[in-house]
Image 1 (tube, helix red, strand yellow):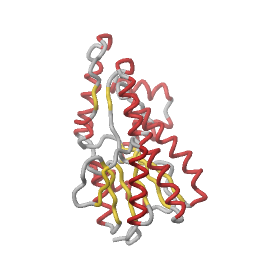
Image 2 (image 1 turned 120 degrees about the vertical axis):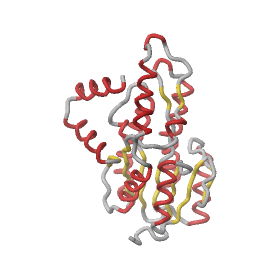
Image 3 (image 1 turned 90 degrees about the vertical axis):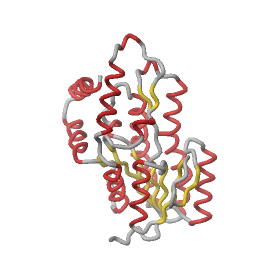
Image 4 (image 1 turned 90 degrees about the horizontal axis):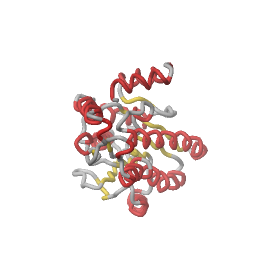
Length: 265
């Protein structure tokens, strides 16, 4: 077992279940001190009840971490939510809500953690983005948009904080079998103009997620990124999705869009 993580302070958001919980367990097994931020209690871990969309709550949590542990070595921005439905059927409230968690939640954590990392001589920030950031899925447009925004933020941040020995990377999971599927917020109304397309698209997504990778696969990817001296800008979660993202880069965008439309449209 590598001792590179022994006594390192690892902060994980959205750690009460799924990828976050699996990552917490894996880092703890490797000797790290794990701090879980979640709205629900995380048994067996030091946990601070935090809504990442609440800027004051985030800064308060990071202050508590500094007072108790003195530093943050690794930050895993994992908290997230999903909504589904046609763009025109999505309320402004729901659109704002998903950005508040998926994008601004990570932004709040970064703002609070970077000064502490800088004072400590460096650190690593791992953003849990999604393959949907690169492959925009119809009827899941706002989820794709938030993850694309998070990926872009991380890529810019990477060069901003490089002089401080802070590394920034992202993992792009594909379908993962977690309770994210059951917690996805579905639009209350669906315009008759779409017929049954929305329901069929969501059914395909949920089937793929139900047959998806176990969270530990992504947790291991997160761990490997944390251990790398020079992590990549982004890494796919799972071999199948690495192939998909490679094809996304080499195929014409029109063809990729056509294929995605056939699968999910």
